[in-house]
Image (cartoon, rainbow, N blue to C red; front, side, top):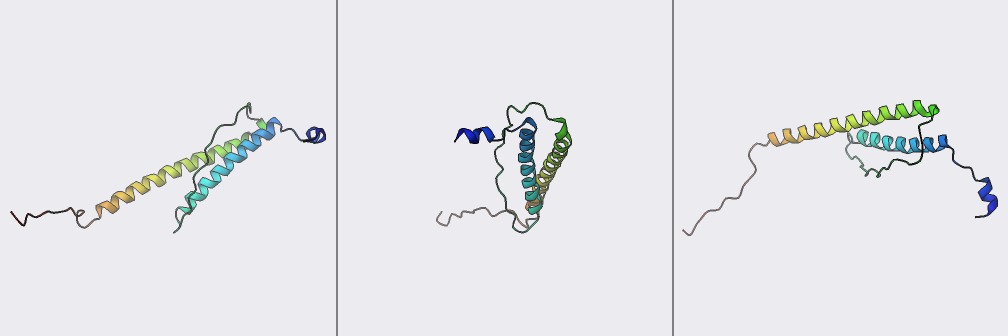
Length: 115
């Protein structure tokens, strides 16, 4: 890369770095929200979440991003609560389906026809 390009490359600022970090988290929350919404359709498409690692070297959150960060935190808490509720509902439905069996599961029976 030439020295001219290096001189004109924008250097990310503290606030820009924080904004990018929040944007990644917002995308993750949006993906979880979409999966929760799709769970009620006939063919939900589930994708594995990306592994997350906290960004390093950002320093304290800029005051200008406080409202955005608080809104993101509220969304994360809401998604976490909805995931827990969905898991609980799934367990209850599985237990109810098991309880509706008309007869116990078949077990093998062996007869001694030679003895």
